[in-house]
Length: 86
Length: 322
Image 1 (spheres, chains in turn blue, orange):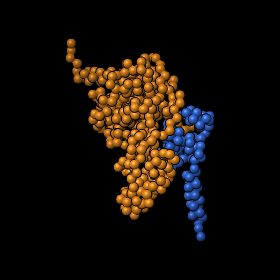
Image 2: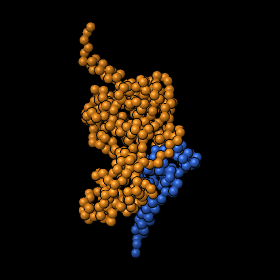
Image 3: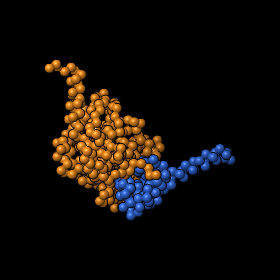
Image 4: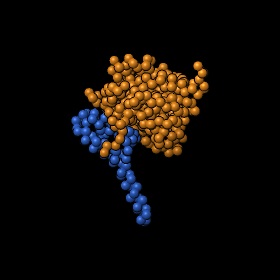
């Protein structure tokens, strides 16, 4: 039988695995690919025909999902996870 | 007239050096209280630190009280090099020849003295320092391949970001950029010149592209020994973009990437760094393992789709959005 301690560890591990594997949405991948190409917020908004605030919103979600502090970090993290192509 | 003593001569030599290099620098105003330096590299191109620009499409050059708006042409966050282009009528007062001639000279050595020349709204800013670290080539955290590790010891303020670092013969050697923990790093002239040359050739900075999505695959010791690999992971192909160079070359999901043009690739960042130096249109040899068997596929480097419309900046902002 599993101890309570073991159960806690299992739950924690599951949580970490879950957190680190939230996939980006198709739109988020699209935004990140443009970020990776060095396009500014304004440029991304124009390209996707959305408002700059929507772009900001997507980028905030991307940073959160990839646990990244900067855009450059997010690009590297997404490359490593196979979410962006080279 | 009384002959100058050695200290006066030393001092005079220093100001001469500063005066000779000052015309190569420009001041770039980023806000009412913030400016950085730029270097007139050659022709119509001015080089500065990409991080400092924070996603601007255009910046203001300040010269003798006059302000000019100039476009940001290229922005490579991986090497922290950004390029501005001044109009042709502004290039006449630029130093002839540019910095390119110096890039093949000897690299800086630790302990050597350097002069660092930048420019603020009030004119040239000059500092002297020492090369603290002169190491081998390195790769930035963002996958930029940088020809030499350069760290300086000098007392400088933020307006020196993007300033010109030259040896004491006045030969330009690097661009000054801020590093982590207050370090002063130098982006070697060779690395800056690689970006400038690419922009000169194409009018913008092309981004080489293969169309590969990769994920790390962890190898056990037995497999590593069997395949003669020392790295603990390999880059596994997780996907191939349709109609991409990788697709045309016949790369398939599940292939394990071993090397590109003879350079071993252990992870996606290494591929990114190698790819960043590749020229679109060039053919590379992609060595991989499929079903455990080694295989080599020729692949032609493509170029990633880059929407470029009027007024659109090539830089992405560095900071997290609010």
